[in-house]
Length: 333
Image (cartoon, rainbow, N blue to C red; front, side):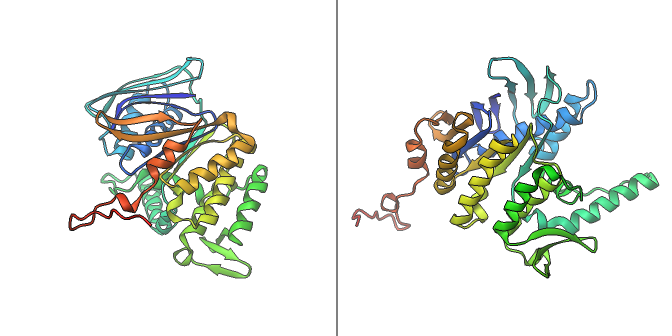
C-alpha cells in the first residue's frame, strides 16, 4: 500500500509504503506524526461512513484529530503498490473538499497509540460516556459539550471493553510475562493485577501501562489481521531493555498476526531493534524513512537499504554544540 501526501501539515510531499512494518524517523517537528494522523482519519471516516458521507465524516475527523488545521491546498492518495487506487482525498482551506473511495473497508480498523497515559483518563472518560448515554436516553435539548482528544477517546473505548479473543492468547500471555501481571476488570474498575495485589492505575509505572494498552487491545479484538496500529514515539516511556521487547512484539504483530504497523520514532535504540528483529522474519515487508529538514522544507526519504544516514541524523554530538555563552567546545576526548 502506498500513501502519497501533497501539502499536508508541514509536509510538502511524501510517498510512504506500508506493506507490514513502516518506521518513520526524524527529529522533533519534522512531520512524523502527520502521516499517521491523516491515514488514521481517512480510515476512520471510511469505516464509519454510509454512502456519500465520507467527505462529511472526514471533516469531522479533521476537527477531532487536527483541530481543523491540516492544509490550505493538499491531497492524500492511498493506492495499492501496483497503482490501483483505494482513496483520493483532497483538502482546501483546512477542509475536506473531496473523498473518492474505490475500495471501501480496505483496512478494517486503525488504532493510534500516542501515550500510555490514556489509562490516567479512564475515570474522566467513564464520566463522559455516562453523560453521552444520558443525553441519548433523555434526548436532552441542550446537550453537554466537553472537548477531549479523540485519539485518546478511541483507545479508551477499545481498552475498556471486556471481550476476550482466544486467537491472541499467545500475544497476551507474552505481554503478561513481560510486565509480570495483567490489566483486569475488578469491581467495575480496571486495575493492574500482580499476583494477589490489585494496583490502582495511578500507581502503575508508565512502561507497564504501555504494554497494558497492547494487552487490552489484543484481548478486545483490536490487533487482528488487516488492521492498522500506529505507535507514536514509544521509546519515551520505556527502559532500553523494554524497548527491545516492544520491538520484538511489534515485529511479531506483523509476522504472526498480519497487523499493519506504523511506528514514529526519534530513538536510534528503538529503530535499531526494529531493524534487527524485522530482518529475521519480515525484511521484505519493512520500510524505514527519514524526515529531514532542508532548505526546501521537510524531505521524506526512504533509507531502508542503508540506515547510516538515519542514525547520523538522530545522533547528538555534544562537541559540536555551542554553549549558552557563545563559546564552543573544540577538544574532543
